[in-house]
Every structure is written in structure tokens, then in C-alpha cells.
Image 1 (cartoon, helix red, strand yellow):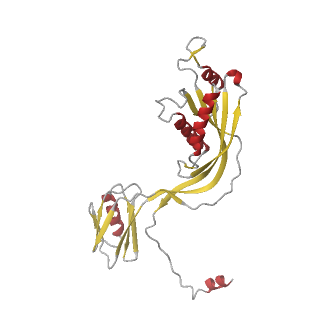
Image 2 (cartoon, rainbow, N blue to C red; image 1 turned 90 degrees about the vertical axis):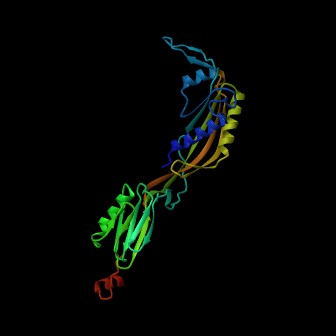
Image 3 (cartoon, rainbow, N blue to C red; image 1 turned 30 degrees about the vertical axis):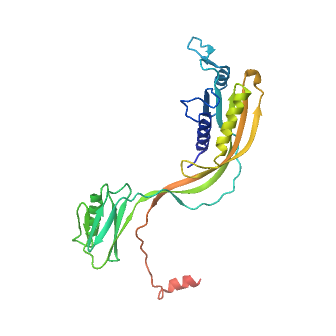
Length: 293
């Protein structure tokens, strides 16, 4: 399921891509080192970064000039509270499709199989429209042997080799292939406001970083989460805070409303056969009475 941490991780990645468009081994868009992280800044570390200082290993440790100069910060932090979202009951959808690696051909009473079975894959036989056998296995040979063993209850002469299966049916032999995958269903949607905050040592750096990050995030409105659900990201507002100028900290909050889903994941299996019972209720007085009630 998608979690708020998946949302903040995505925004942190987008911010990093905007600040370091050529990778972190190259210079940032402001030609200054930048820390980009999920969470709120540690005040002492933020003060050192803005001042271009670092702690040395002396006892007690003292701040010394950092060789690289000031370090801008970009933090990604969820705002408190949530917004009520209209709920839609979604249909079940496939997250991971079943893997079916083997194929088969039927000639008379003999089935020839090629390929090796995948995890969760199985084969189903429908014999004479009356008997159904399904089996998987670690290998194709093991699967065919399991099917032969099951079929021997009704067809004692059934046999298997590493690639073939023979069942002496009377008139019909049907083969179907199946497997298991992962399905999902959205059970709830929620919306949170998330702040992407730029902490810079001067106004110029703040403006350039915030502009690059805001532009990058706004380019994609619908985002695929790790569980394959869709998150919708909408710009909300921008806040500029200069109250910490005396400490050399210039701040801008970029606030986005993110709507994302909670997805229930479960195993889905390919249906290869069905059975049903037909009851003649014409002479069943209790059934008729129930129907007329």
C-alpha cells in the first residue's frame, strides 16, 4: 500500500533531481552544496550549514570553517492534519500478472509440454467433461508427474515423462494453463499537505533553488506510487519567511496537496475450470414453498 512516506520520498527525489540535474557528482544549480532530506532540520546542523561551518573532533568540539562554504538545505515535511477526500469504491486490478512460461499441444491422448514452469504456475486437465485435475511443481517434469498421479484415480493407465503426459480418455481431453499473480483494490483515499522547504544562506540561492524545485514538481500531476496506485499532486501555496535573517537563514515553503490511495494487495489465481451442480426442484415441495414465500 502507498504510505505518506512514499509521497515524501517521491518529493525528495524530485527535489534532488531539480537541484542536481546532472547527478550529485556534478555541481548543483546554485553551485553550492545542498542537503536534501525527508524530515525537519536539526537546528544546530542548520545553523552550521548556513554559516559554512562544521564541527571538528576537538574535545569539546568547536565549529570551524567548512572548506566547501555554506550548505543549502531542502527539507520535505508533512503538514499536520489531513483533508477529507471523496471516496470511490474502485474495481480490482492487476498489479503483477501471472507468469505462464509453458505451452502445450494435444495429439490424441498425449499432451506435449515445452518450457519450464514459473513460480505459482499450474496446468489443468478436463477429461471427458467429467474429471478435473490441476497441479503445479518445481519443474515441468514434476508438474506432469503430479497430474499423472492424480489422473490415475480414474485413468489407471495415465503416465508421464519429462515433457509429455498421456491420459487414455474416452472422448475429450482439454488442457488449460494458469498461474498466480498479485491484485490490488483501492480501499481508501487520503489527502495531505506536504511542505518542501528551502533553507538558504541568502535570497538569491533561495530563489533559484525554490524555482527549480517548484518547476520540476509541477511538471507531473499524476504520479505512480510503488504499489502501482496513482497519487495526484497539486500546488497549494508558497510562504516566504525572512524572520531568521539575523542568523543568515532565508526560508521558502512550497506547499503541495497530495491525494494518494491505500491499496489492499492479495493473490489472484487464473481460473482454469469451474464446476456446478444442477438440482431438479420440480418435485421438491420445500424448495417450491421457499420460492413462493
